[in-house]
Length: 232
Image (cartoon, rainbow, N blue to C red; front, side, top):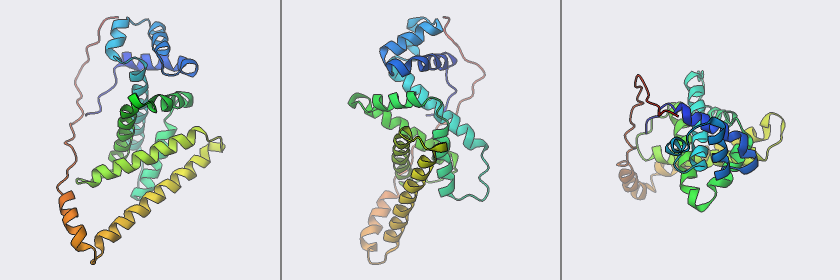
């Protein structure tokens, strides 16, 4: 899906919701309060967020991804390897969070069974934004494994950060370093297994099969000259 600019009306709804999330979480009460605070018609608000506060929570997460993409677009990665780039990006995504309590309440919301698929999709989107932002060019099954692994790293890092009261979130930075180091060790082990001559009769057919897996076709971002907004 292309990264289209957010609807300004939806952005206003999310901003208004943040004032109430600390009290009521991402709940119907928060959605109603946001609609009232913006003076928006309820039918218009429901068009923007058909599932109410759940859609506002999703929109808030995507705002953080958009902020991350801008950081990565202007970052100077000169001399940095992929490990350093990914570490920088994970830290930058957490730094892009504007409201810790909103994320805490969102974590509880997406932990509910009926919302778990939405939470997984959001984590995948964040991992995708990171890999694209650091210039990853994987065009086989690694495109999927990299995003799945990084989604787990980012999700665990956010959970750690929510309970971190260290100065400058240094404990979270150290946690991210450890998790990414674990991923690098796994990737090195994979390379050793794939390069082992004794295991080649087993790994070669599997790698040949996996080599046929391709990432989805990415639609280009659409930058049309205008936007129609329903009257309020």
